[in-house]
Image (cartoon, rainbow, N blue to C red; front, side):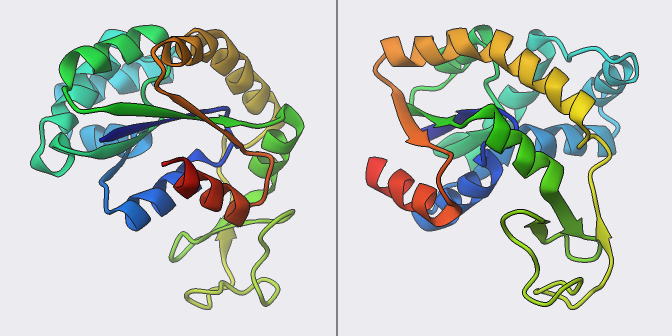
Length: 209
């Protein structure tokens, strides 16, 4: 099975995707991981991606499709996979359907914009082990001390600011809504209330699947 995770920034796709991968023994693949790998290996696609990013432009769908398909041909992801961050639009969804024969299920994380923004603006990570926290929902058990490694150094993502978030939200709405309808029409869409707490969402996902 291939599971596609759809939702606005801050909907909780990454957290729940990794939970499902571990619970259901599936591979987990995020576009962020793919793009970083391509860039670090200095592959031609990585240079193109850097060129688009440095100009503030979205990476074209054809290039994204090419990169994703390269990963999906690997043994680790060929037979089953949870995809986080791909597809992002209708063209990518149709490309994915044309390239794999396995069953595809799309999970739509339906979340209010207010909650999504709060999750993004509140998140921070341990600078040593990268454990993720949130000042609104998931503080360290001991103030300013990482639960995992005991470090007192924390970092925030540089793009977690309100202007950037508003831009990402707008892009998401324009690109993703037709894709959600596509999966709904194909009877492949499962919807989860992503306004709930993390454990409630996890429980709902397992019931749906």
